[in-house]
Amino acid sequence: MSSYRVVSGHFMDDDKIKIFSDKNDLWTRTKTSGLSCLKNYLNDNSAKELGDITGLTADKFIFVKKDQQLISVNKTDQNFILRTTFALETKLADDKKIFGYYSLDVDKDADIIDDWLVFK
Image: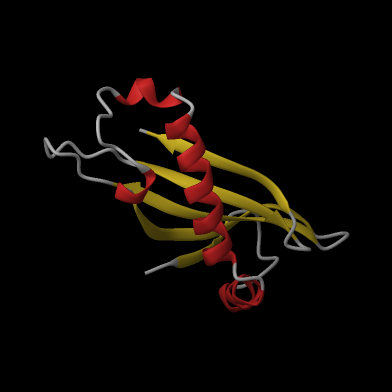
């Protein structure tokens, strides 16, 4: 289940965030972008910090809808940045779970501003 919340004031209520998100297919765009980012991360040997990654591939990660939130709001010109976040989970052969998240930030035109792949 996803949640919608405003961090900086009351610029958009939950319904307006959901409408904007649905209109721009942000959950799907975020998951697609996250999967691509994850594949690149695992393929370029950046994942050494995760420990033994034998057999770990992007398709073994589970994307779980977490939330959407306004992280920046400029009421004067009606600008905002909306962050859509998936939690990342996986089970490796030794039952070790890796937790992290992937977030995608878009502006009022649904143009991508930034993205984040984080492992905890």
